[in-house]
Length: 115
Length: 109
Image (cartoon, rainbow over all chains, first blue to last red; front, top):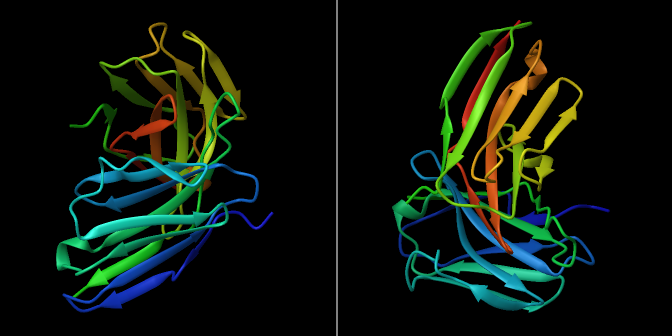
């Protein structure tokens, strides 16, 4: 299995631009998570989906952030408009919710820099 | 609000030394996980503990879950430079995970 795939690996953009991050979860996993990691705040859960349905988006910072999961093999996290304080590493993770332990598998992350 | 507090935040030791990392919370979790993260990569799961008082060993790493399922510890025996990384604990509340602030470990040869 290829593991969780994220693209792009690095993104540099200017303030005000739209940014779209992409994630392909592990095949067969039915839960998908988006996290943001910064030095100051550590790893924060932004939103998670079960069976393609958003369950908890309480971690999404503000309306500039949105996430979609149109099917079981693809999800996007969009920031519009982007701001310098959005600079961070964004991780996608997936898990098999039916398993007792709900072990998460992380992608390699997208390093976002907003100038 | 940080539900899980890890200590110490930073640890720099010599190869061969032992160390313990702590993960504490006032909340009860259904399970607790430990991850290791290397620079430029995502966290990688090391272990999951489920039962209060449970102890799991992974080679030189020993993980313990507190009796009340609120805290956990990670003990490394005879640390090696390959153990260097960021260690994260994560408490599970049903399908939602809360990550600790992390312990950055540096093992010097």
